[in-house]
Length: 143
Image 1 (cartoon, rainbow, N blue to C red):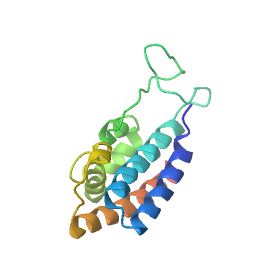
Image 2: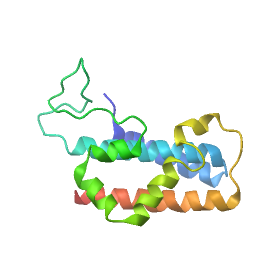
Image 3: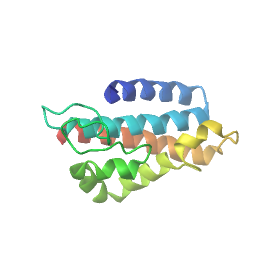
C-alpha cells in the first residue's frame, strides 16, 4: 500500500536539494512527482474511515469507487471535488498546476530529457512549484 504523504515529503525534500544544486531537469521531474503524491494523499484523506487506502480496480474493491488518476493532475482533481472547486476559483493555481505538470513536456517524461531549460523558464517553474506546494498544503489542512 502506498503512503503518498510520506512519498510527498521525500520527493519534496529531493526537489529542494536538486534545486539548490541546480539540477534543473531532475528538480522539475521530482517536483512533478511530489505534487502528484500530494494530490493523491489529499484524495486518500477524503476516503471513508472504513475504506482501505487503495485504488479501486477491476480486481480490488477497497470500499470506495475512486480509481488511480495516474500521473495526471487534472484526473487527480476530478477525484477530489472540493479541491477541484477551489482550484477552478483561482486562475493562478491553475497556471501553477500547468507549469509543474508540463514545464516543456510532461513531468514524467522529463526523466528522459537532456535539454536543460533556460534560466527564465526554470525560475518560473521554481516559483510555481513553491507557491503550488504551499497552497496545496494549506488546502490539505482546510478540506
